[in-house]
Length: 81
Image (cartoon, rainbow, N blue to C red; front, side):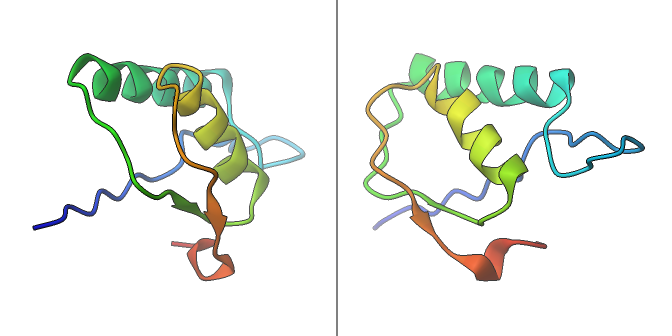
C-alpha cells in the first residue's frame, strides 16, 4: 500500500511587505525536514506543490537536504491549503 505525506510550507514572512516568501526560520524548518527524511532513507515517487513562492522555496530547502526528489508537479489547488 502506498503512503501519502502532506507537508505544509515553512514559516512565511508574516508581517513583512512580502508575505509570500519563507522567513529564515521557515528555511531552517524545511532543511530540517529534509534531513529527517534523509536520515530515515525516505524516498519519494512523486512530489506535488502549489504555485506560490513560499511553496517553491520550501521544496527547494527540503530538497537541499534530500537529494533525488523527482521534479515536482504544480497544482494551483494547493495554493491556500
